[in-house]
Image: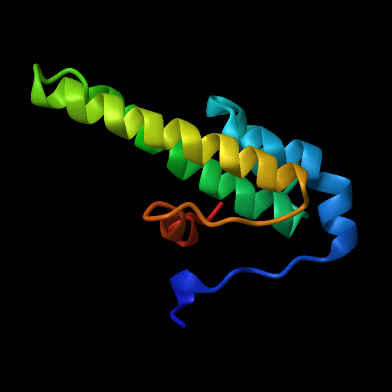
Length: 113
């Protein structure tokens, strides 16, 4: 298993104490709250980084959506997929689990805050 495919392990107390704030990671710009406020929580940081990658994907999708016809179609499909990823991430976080977003989640390892 490569570095990008490893699912991180978390302390159960860390998960229980920080799952609500980690869930903010999947609500747009609110991903910055766990990244800045919970530097000591590995659980909140991993979700915050993944939420930041998701936010950047939403911004890129907005730019793609400006292209007539093909961009509109691609933007719509990608937007729905990103929304589904955000909802799944939010639910998994509230359940105290970590779920790596397909295709995008691996880029969280490149973020160093």
